[in-house]
Length: 255
Ligand SMILES: [Zn+2]
Image (cartoon, rainbow, N blue to C red; front, side):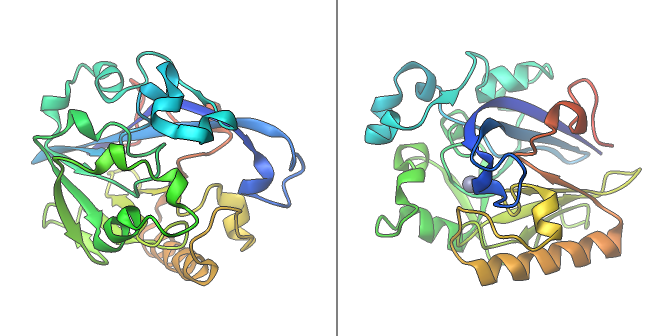
């Protein structure tokens, strides 16, 4: 089994939102977006789907007034088809989709994956469609409202029934965030997505600026580290600022 990391654009974020103790807090740094392809003998999995291309071409149509204060930095091929093409794949080659959560920078490519089951925590679906909370602006309902073959799960879920690709509920960032553990042979790979924006503040138990529930995030961090200790997994955060050196570029993989 292998994990390919596909860099699919990014934006500029005040790094203080990720870690208030960061030496550059208050400065806008490049924040990468990623989707991941996991090759399992019984199917190809896509974890997360990047940002919708209209965030590049016509941001106001998708973001509304948020377009005044936010700019996604996307290239034309930072889409699901464009990213998969780097591996010689098309959306039709994806058998299973997993969404860590449904924020706009993770869920913008579902329209290319109507054929595939999409695994998500039930709590995340409920939260994403609830328009009353203070994260509603960073969920774009157009990304996920129609024609998705949802497979809601609650808590831990063994994707292929063989213990090699495991979904773990890691709420905190959002109400139903989940992370994906993969039994890559040299060392397991634990794709945390946004369960922690960065690894170092997680080690120091410093909570980030975008939070559904801080207590839940601290509990998730305890469980992530317990799985790390038990399995020797490498921990991967989607928005790692050191991605240029820390994350393999295709054809390199985590394996
Ligand atoms: Zn997020």
